[in-house]
Length: 178
Image (cartoon, rainbow, N blue to C red):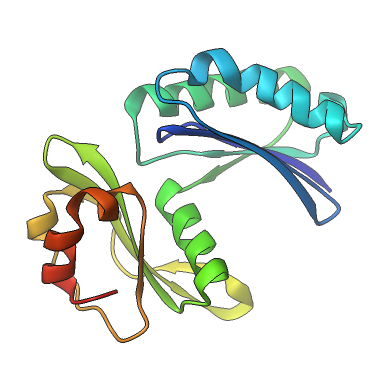
């Protein structure tokens, strides 16, 4: 199985290719450059893995929440590729992807993901690990001021995402210390 994945919903631009369970990836922190770098990143990744677009079985993308323009860039690239190659599309929540990464890296059971939405708000979601390492939503994903979040954190919970960098003191006060 070969799946190409891309995400442009945040300031980071990333592409990944999974070939028979092996993952290779490219990542750049490049605010406002996604439209210029996403296609070359895809081409480089495919070339390095000796793959072509016609070898793909599906395309996945970060469908948000996140930057409106960034999500449109990813959706446009994915739509063009999927229609041209007749491939299925797999939308993946940006918050759930962040939570999954934190679960793997920190061995966490519960993760609270926050992306800075600007203008005093965050994109927010709480997740837990379930059977087979699947990510299950504990709360609806939403956008709100960080001081409006009302989720009780438990010992061992982890916070992840740019919202924690920007609003750490408020989020820590609201949830305790994830």
